[in-house]
Image (cartoon, rainbow, N blue to C red; front, top):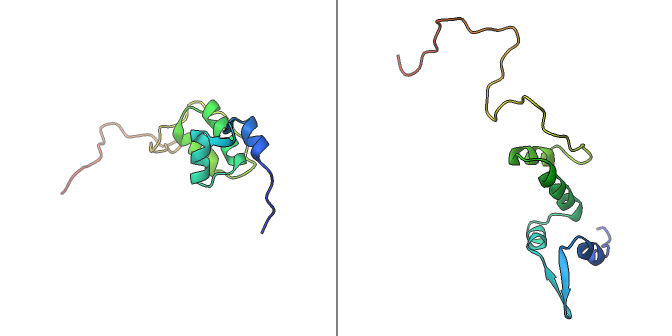
Length: 103
């Protein structure tokens, strides 16, 4: 079992909690973080991605890549999600249609 580290100062600094009188109140984001066991490092990465990447699927892909992978901007000319990849050098023959339905 590891050791715990004091995080209150860090949470206050990142505005995830605030002191109200003698109480500490969680922000909505801190509540989600706690309910889903998201660590502060992971939450920081998510916040950075939301600020830099516009496509939700790209954010998920970046999160799934693993620790230490650089956050890269989306590549230009990328395919739509679910689009088939064209094989290089293979051209569609004119007049040839793909059969659909039952025979």
